Length: 423
Image (cartoon, rainbow, N blue to C red; front, top):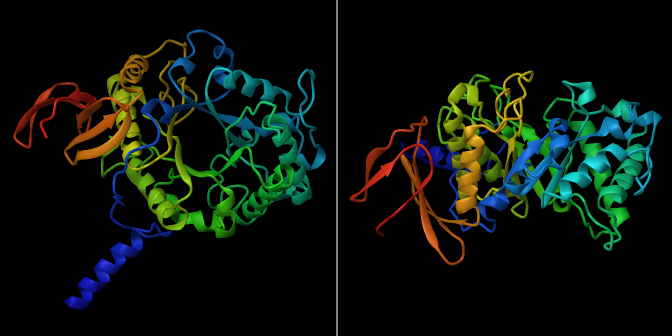
């Protein structure tokens, strides 16, 4: 009996480190005050479908402090293979040439959004999102030159020149055996780091993030390939790791679960938190994709789940939460109505609910957990004022019901709201 108990305790301790393949109880680290405000944490992933909107006064750059761009590498190579064409660094005022289209896209974004993330990928090869090692040709030579030209274009070492990108995510979901595969990716990662070290003389100006890991396969976990993808010797050169965490119902591709639900997969981001805390605590952790389909759960629930996901992320020390994406894409399976603006470019109810919430509470930072079971109550501060945000966990309910908490009667529903709390 004692031996069995010892093994069970030891297993829980080992699994709390987030080792690959380990099926542990949910990691629950101590809650600490967050360095960023809710508005500073929250962002949007954007594709090419909203470039034309970014200059308009109505563009939600007034709402979001972060934007993640799918950086389309085929634009740099002018639809040739990397082995056959090496673009030169873009020079302001040039009309054509490598990097020009991506440069102007990024410049538009940076003028309106404080924090910009690039995620390297190529959608021309979909469903593969990366070039293979063979397509790079002499990978070390080609990637080395490409990386230095990219840095010279978007974040030059001359600090008198503008840096248009804050964080480079080295890949959108090159996860596990997906293209280019762990061995090729490790070679690519090491080459990017070497090229940046040489270009910046060891004093990096642009920050690097590990690729965006994903949990989209029903029978997999986020950490299953992480040690293959991220050699320990590279970690001191990275500033962040990132992952994509959708609230799929377990065993399916249906995004219909509340963020706190044990039947959903959003909270699997805690696996990555556990790995980070035990292996590389210096790394920021970003959730660079999540979202809910409004056609499945409704627009009120969509807003509530995104805000609850934001608050849960703050509680676990996630640096940024970036949802996918701004506009609905009816032609994209699984995520077709995850936008806050519909395909006809009309803001949904969820857009206005999130906008109004951030206008009221966006300056507040997470401070402390009061309750995190059936009723969630977190304290937040803007430096001068303290408030308590609370909601009922589980499937969204718009109807308010009375909840007893420590002798108090609270009127709550599924939307985070400010309450008065006697402590």
